[in-house]
Length: 415
Ligand code: GAL
Image 1 (cartoon, protein in one colour):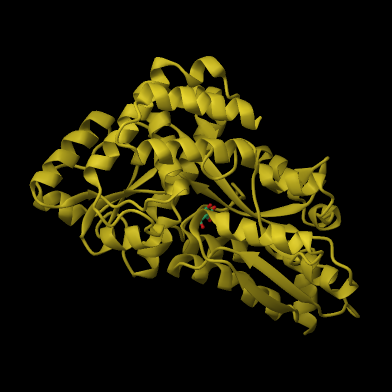
Image 2 (spheres, rainbow, N blue to C red):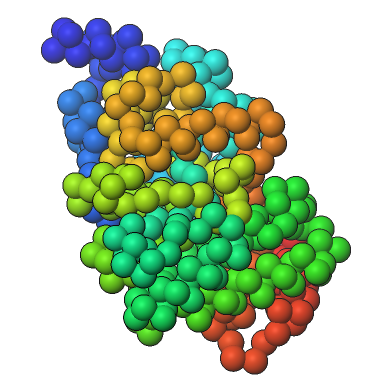
């Protein structure tokens, strides 16, 4: 007990002598195999500190379902103590006055010095810490089954042209080339990687951060939409509504050749006991190797009516930047630590590559915020983009020009 108290103090946790144990209800959408293993790391650490963890998992990749439940809980005056919210959504909750100030924990743990600015900025509302980051995900990845590629006699693609050549060859060999889940956020995840491949990082920002109307209706955008539409020729009939981790399972079992998904997919390969390089391949989405679309997961703390819950919140916030949490959580989650000074020797080659690219793109350009995962724009603009992307992907008659015009208008209306 004494050791724990000391450790808690060293880590800046607030569980000093005489502190109360409290309950902390944590809302999240980490329910797949890899995700559940990752969040259980935090649960165990919080419970080791003597607090009670109440798990409030709302299934649904990308978090749309969880956000809906969170809104209704908040409206009824009963938000959970902590919730997995991220990106600009943190600002929206901060503006509404729901979030607790974490500055004491942040100061005690030196968050300003430990976190890259790009990460720290997302965690602050009006200059005060209100959320704690747990990881950095890279979104622009492709996950491939090397045995399936080999049996069709094709190489893992590194450019968009090679992607379509490979997809044709795989299809001709009777394999489903692309494992896809037809849900709006998954459509948007693939779409944004294609925008990055076709237009590059500056164009990506013009479109998804600045919402520049010329860029939105440019030839580059139309080309991106056309390339995106081609994906629909290479997916199977079971795609509509499929969960992302079910799609990852298809690649794992060799029922499909590849999936376009952020590195939470790696959590599924890891949970299945597979090794990158031999059992599966992680490669940047074709044509995006010099870019890094980031998606930072975080837990925001909601103001609580009682001191013991506040105590538990602050204890939890004090744990997340520790070496132990950053390493174990991210090994399971497929992401990289939020701290760039971490020893990466326990991490696999995909994570080491992600960390290197995160640092190099932060220094030289190419680090862009994910639209599909709430990092680049407000939830209403994101919703407007999702709607057009999904409608276009599933439509038999909508042209890329029409989709570009509709998206530009929808974004303007949502701003
Ligand atoms: C993302 C989230 C990831 C991962 C994914 C699928 O939005 O940032 O951590 O869980 O959804 O659920």
